[in-house]
Image (cartoon, rainbow, N blue to C red; front, side, top):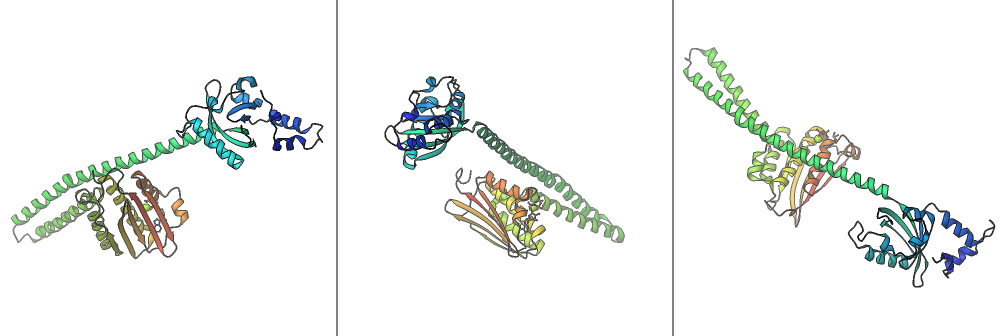
Length: 376
Ligand SMILES: Nc1ncnc2c1ncn2[C@@H]1O[C@H](COP(=O)(O)OP(=O)(O)OP(=O)(O)O)[C@@H](O)[C@H]1O
Ligand SMILES: [Mg+2]
């Protein structure tokens, strides 16, 4: 095996010639540093290993330097790197970059002599630019870090899927409760109403007390019918399913204004035409925003806009209330905000919320128009 110190090169000779105070000459001191380093170090001539230290032997599962000498980087790497690029091509690019900059840092997957793969962060320094280029590479094992990152990513992914699944189950349950309320309870109340009307007709006029009672009960039943309709349409916005997002938001905004006295301006681009899943997600976000405005904002005005900019659809809602703070937005128990963000992500969108004290709160959702084509 070549000795690094035999490579005739200016930079290295500087190290060789420095300080003699330890009793070792520069070359010996450097050799000691190289051999004793706990970090694996390899020296490459071009793409071929010409020297390495004990730490490198250990991580490569080798016992003698001769086992590694002469091997190319490709022979100690899997054919493909995790980003899908060929190791051979990637080494070429990285060597060129190192030659240009004099050094380089990158992450790499190596394969030891037993075939086991491990992640390293490579610090590459060019010590001779003359062809074949001589480089000095140290490896830091990052396998553990990469494994934790992967686990974290996977667990985040699973949580996101779970959250999406829970949302779907919730929608399904809402729908069936709404149907039960509307069809069964609504039907019963209608029958009761009709029977009461029939009884009212049959009772002689002189029975004023009984007739008064029946009239009061009829009015109560009517109120109950209205409540059933209101609750069931909140649970399952039929208008959304039948006519789409725009009429649904228009109607909800009207009743929001009527109930709260908050002036609600709506500007909805009729060119927006979305499939059911995306309409439902945007509608639920709109519902959460209006609930928040009632509960927290102290606003007198709400502006809602739905616009299409080429491939992007943006739903924006601004109130003129106290303005949500960054602390409230980031609070781990702000599940309403978290739910809106998750819903937006679930349909491939982005969610923004921002408050300015005394000016108000703005919520903006942007989704790509054509993720899976337009309407299903
Ligand atoms: N429009 C707004 N104006 C001012 N503050 C707001 C507004 N929207 C939200 N906030 C603040 O942000 C907090 C978090 O909102 P979030 O919707 O996540 O939770 P919540 O409404 O308190 O409870 P829920 O889980 O029922 O939605 C609120 O408690 C409130 O303090
Ligand atoms: Mg809320």
